[in-house]
Image (cartoon, rainbow, N blue to C red; front, side, top):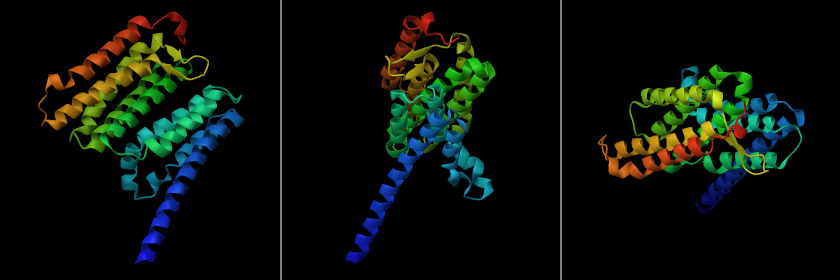
Length: 262
């Protein structure tokens, strides 16, 4: 019996180590090959190949699995495209992107608590819409609007389903996706990018607004779920005021033309 327990613990330890190594390789190789080739193609292929489990079941479950993996796919694709946008010369920002992707794969993605589900969803919004904003001058407003809809839908559906908070997850997520896409459409002619010093790290104003909006939305939804759909404003007044304050500060105080990417 003791030997069995030892063997099982050894296998679990080996599995954990292998999981970490493979994810480190995915983060390093997918971004590294993007830098070396100056192309996003191989990096994106690696990200999608890493999701092979989506199609390792009966085809009836492919769409369901794809929907449940959208947040992870959005984050992975964003890291690769951000590395591509940073250029083919290896820079400190590329190291940060590799590190960020590794942290996502090893520490954030596997967690399933309510807090981490919200962190995962907001990460997808922040990274996904920043990437979409950077490429918007090339892709155009229609693509930005559509991608933002997918990101908003995926983030909302991820939180609602993972937390088991709402039976109408698909319908509510469609509404949130439409709201996010409408904001993206309105923001297209004034897309603004904020850079952090000389690090090369950047975020779009659109991504920050949608992330803050999503935070308030998730807090309200969690409050409704906790009290049987009975809304108590006093329990969410602080998150709502915080979200509104941040959005007002971003729009009023940090919308100078020098940040505009058009």
